[in-house]
Length: 287
Image 1 (cartoon, rainbow, N blue to C red):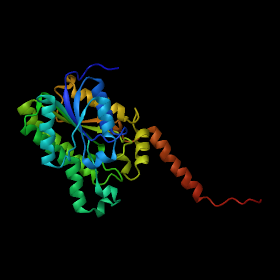
Image 2 (image 1 turned 180 degrees about the vertical axis):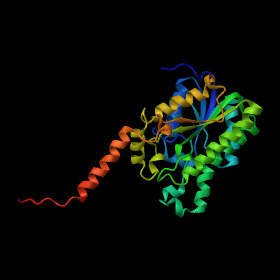
Image 3 (image 1 turned 30 degrees about the vertical axis):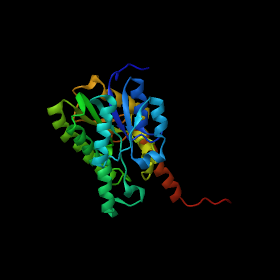
Image 4 (image 1 turned 90 degrees about the vertical axis):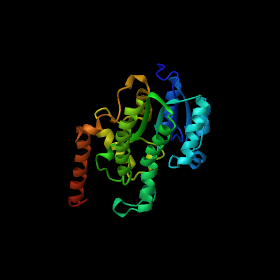
C-alpha cells in the first residue's frame, strides 16, 4: 500500500545494480510513494547490471557517474538539477566494494592500495557526494541524505575485512557532515545499519551465508530484508523524520542489542555434540 509519503519529492539514488540491490528496492518504493529521481552507478557496473530496466519501470533518467570522481559528481548534480528544474530532496548512497575482499586477502595481509580504494569507494565517496551537492546548494531545506552501513563498524565480524573500517568511516562522515549540513541548510544526514542482506555485493564476503544464518538466529525479529530496508529508507526521506539527523540507525531485527539468543545457543551446542561423537571410539560391528 502506498501512502504518497514522497509525493512531489525528487532525488538521486546511487548503487542500483539488479533486483537484488537494496538501492533497486528503494527506487521501486520511492516511485510507488510518488517520488521522481535520477538513477546512477559507475559505467562498469551499469554494463554488468540492469539499470535501464529499472529506469523504464520507474520513469527515471540514468546518469552514469563514478562516485569517487569529482568531475562525474559535478556532472551528475548539475544534470539532475536541470532535469528536476531546480533543487532536489534526497540522496541514497548505496555503494560499497573492497578489492581486498574480492581477492581473498585477510585483514592482517591487506594490499594498502586496495585498502585505499575500499575507503574511497565505500566511504569517502559519501563525503564527496555531499560536498558537491552542498557546493551547488542542490538539496532543499529539510532534505535527507542517507547511506547504508553495517554493524561491523562497531563490532568485529569474521570475514568482513577492511569493509568494517570503511563502514566506521562512513558513519563518522555522516555525523561530521550532518552537523554542518544541518546547521547551515537544514539537511539531515543519517546511516542505516542493515542486517546482512543477500545482494551481489554482500555475497562476496567470506562466509556470508553463515553470517546471515547467525544473524537470523540471534535477532529476535529475524533479519531485515532488502524490501523492509527500502521501506525504512522511504520514511527517512519523508517529512515524518525531519528532526532525525547524524544518527546510525540499526535496522537489523534487534541483532545489534543481542549477545546470545536461545536459537543461536542451541545451534552452538550442537557443535559440541558433534565433537563428542567424533571423539568417541568406533563401536565394533560385531559383539
